[in-house]
Image (cartoon, rainbow, N blue to C red; front, side, top):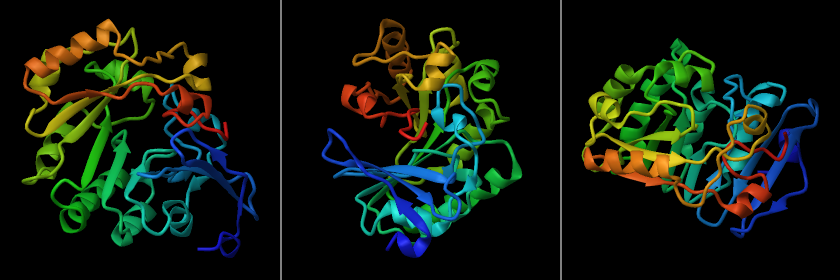
Length: 278
């Protein structure tokens, strides 16, 4: 797909330590509408919006001028022709963009990862219902991983970090049980744990079924927003507070993992929460 035919200008790519590239583009007729994506040997990580209306306190996407959903052709440009794994986690809230569903309908990707904050609104609810049907039909038997951002077991903490109305634990738990079919990947609850936030493993176990959900703990990378809000907490090994909660969850029957900071990704502004465009 030629970028010129889409009215898009490709900017100079930036090499990544993984052997991939951080790529950026902007519309020729509206140069303030830009987006970026990561092309790596094993996966492609794309943006779904230009900027982001959610405004999570650790993510630089909320500092950019919000210019709305990217088009299906702009999503196709990023995804490429044959990605091994397609990850919809770079910039923007996927459930706000119906073109994401159209992309997934035609994508030849072997695996898909989609992350959402689960906005509590009709647009996102309709999207997730359609995504459930699409996953069952096109990406069965573990080929699709759905991830919810879940930084705290305390609703007030979660709302302070993700300043939009989102699904609560009960609604996520009910949807997760409907999502799971035999041999599907567990629904991931992603925890960018902030030091001052409450995270109670026993409350997590009361709210979520270990047969349906798993937990992934991630650092809060040094984005401009994270630094401004005093939230940065990078680590190569889980700090004691994170490790203790991981152990408690594992004892309660959950599958638990950690995704440590990668210095090369941080230096390239390619880590979660960071944007070269910001």
